[in-house]
Length: 260
Image (tube, rainbow, N blue to C red; front, side, top):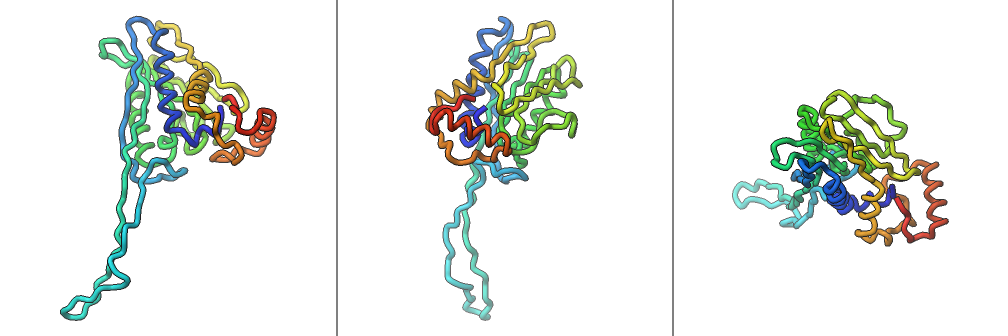
């Protein structure tokens, strides 16, 4: 997974959701269908992690005078405010639902996590609400976390199992027919992204979703071969991974595509 894509995650996230829908559709049983859904929220605070973009923007407009204003009667000084405009941007996050064609039952929910889900604030709150709803239903939950920044919000018990690194790429699957079960997939930076076995109905064979193919499509369609690889990604890589990435970039030629 190319860590430099995280700087453009809004575009990449939408692409992954759409391409995953397109990959799923022809391979699903005739009674099932994949649909892109959205949750919409206004992020009013940056949260406890890295600042979320888009976020609240504050612009100073003006100060009405150079100092305090005095009332004509009584000589009482009244403070003069600096005037600001708070610009809130609405954020729409996509996710996937596999459901019965008549819409009567959701079979599987697939989430590609975003920085807003992991940085505290309204985005994380809305994500955890959705996660809780799925976990209290009979639908399966698939969480795919390719974002290294922020808190781990996967449906795991605290500190169990321990993560090798706070910057691990992870996926977590909870089958709807075995609610307490968690299947954790670790995806090290230096290895190719794996295929994930997506649960459908209990009697169905799992659908094999090729993560690498999805990221390759997003990379090519977004023309990310023009990314600037001369600076460190945000957040920076651990020293050993940074040395590995630098060697990879030297061998590939800076500015050329580095495959996820």
